[in-house]
Image (cartoon, rainbow, N blue to C red; front, side):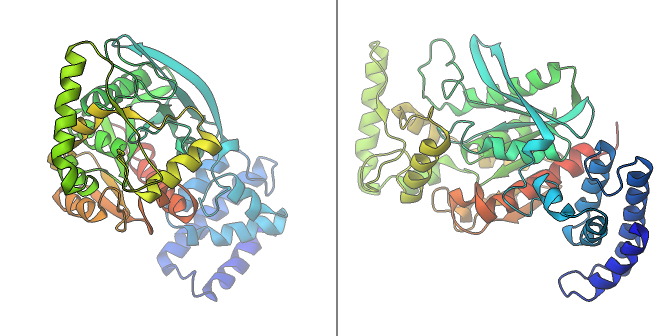
Length: 411
């Protein structure tokens, strides 16, 4: 009955305008689907899609286009009621918000010490495959902590067979500051060093395939990922979403021109105070008044950080050192983007981003060399983290890592 159902599904698909794969693609996917059904039946599971081997086969089918999986789901649904809902819930297609794949991965708390600082985070392992795992290092943006949706991305990646190292930057969230430096200071070059340290930690684990390391970052973390990938050739695939690409231009867009002189005076005063041994000056990350001094003075920044902290990230603090802004202004990841090649680069951009100008990101993409790919997300900077934007950003990143880490030939 299951084999016949594939033929029925084929005819159903040909009747739907939204599912018209080319004939040669259709022949291939039907063959793969038949093989999968055979394996399921031989394993005594019938239409059950829980088996590890079958999960990986399903992922391979999906990587060739979600529309090619539809007949297989129709087939499975004939044998087992609710196969579509189960498939969505297991995170194999990213076609619904519930498809994060939490039930396809195991998360463990981890910590490691480097440069005198203990870094804390999570290590995700995929339940549907065996070690050693291709692994993605995942890190966040300006002042953000791992609880601010990094778990959602890690679950999607783990559901596709990838392990993940997710951590807080030094001095933020659960991680200690580097000795001799204050908490809540965003030093890009320190963070870049610690991205490389996270890669080293991953490679030190027996359950990680040390030759298949990917790197994912968002916003300021995307900038860190770009620079790291350009100078650390252990990275074999990189994804950076809603990226900061030029600190100097973004600084002039975020800080009003009539405040430039007073900001310079604040930087100079803070340097003198810290030389005298005084505590660093602090500034809010966000404020409900867009005209008030803040590191990220946009309304969507205030709404996202405050709402996300309240719902899921009690450890986030609404302040950073003033020097973080001075470091921000001098940070130019765009200079490193052409140097990422030959490492495969996926850039996920929100053209409507008004925190880090989406237009600047699109121009930075043009500076990148092949192999590269651009994916756009509707909305603004923070729309990539939830809803439809999350499905686009996480799905594109997952597929990029599957292609370049899981499916890449050995050697």
